[in-house]
Length: 136
Image 1 (cartoon, rainbow, N blue to C red):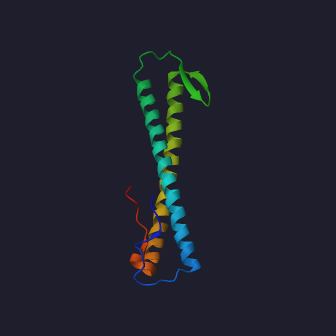
Image 2 (spheres, helix red, strand yellow; image 1 turned 45 degrees about the horizontal axis):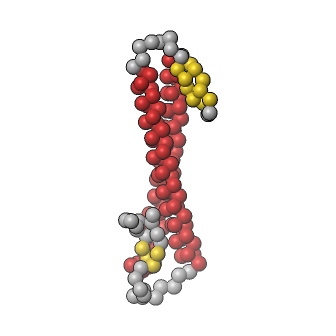
Image 3 (tube, rainbow, N blue to C red; image 1 turned 90 degrees about the vertical axis):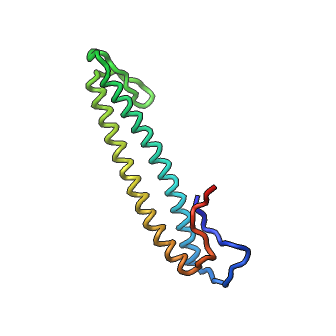
């Protein structure tokens, strides 16, 4: 978790924190938090994607084309042919891949914004502010 905190016991030079500066610090903190949430969401979707891929691989190994395969839709399992189930798995994978791409694009945009805010805040506060991730 990144924190926008003042370093040290007393600042070497007294820097006045304006309302605008405080807004930038708050924006930095909010976006850092949002980026962490997005990264967690991406990880969860990638796990789901891997599960779909595993199910798809297992389905391809089946010898019997006449078997009906149960496919979960919400809380209900519906049986489909092997081919229909394969198509449904592919559609679900494509949807998840698009969602992951969208989330990754949002993370990139936030990283750009955080980079810009870091430049502005470090330019004004120098070593008196810490905008780096805590390694705890």
